[in-house]
Image 1 (cartoon, one colour):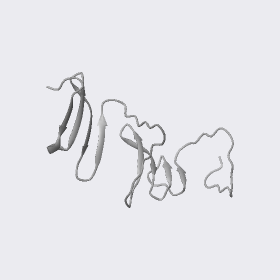
Image 2 (tube, rainbow, N blue to C red):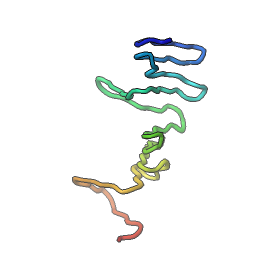
Image 3 (cartoon, rainbow, N blue to C red):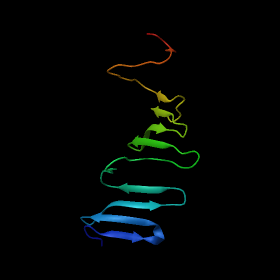
Image 4 (tube, rainbow, N blue to C red):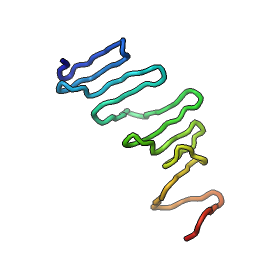
Length: 116
């Protein structure tokens, strides 16, 4: 039975597990296609300077989600979608948007849809 502050490394299952108060708190593992970090506590990425999320092969995307649902996506082309998994522009927002402050436009405004 694991005890508090134990760390188990299991090469056969390709896992590293951390325990606290006799319950597993987190693990790092991989399968044939993905690398996972999971746990029962908050996951925090901290750095003294920069933190980078980078995909290095074709088709790389970065997704952000909550409650096991994708909410935002950054595509390999640099297009960022909020509320869509297929952004068509540099910033593609699906849903209502609230903006406070100034908006600087360097081009034309195109309106599509109802004006009501």
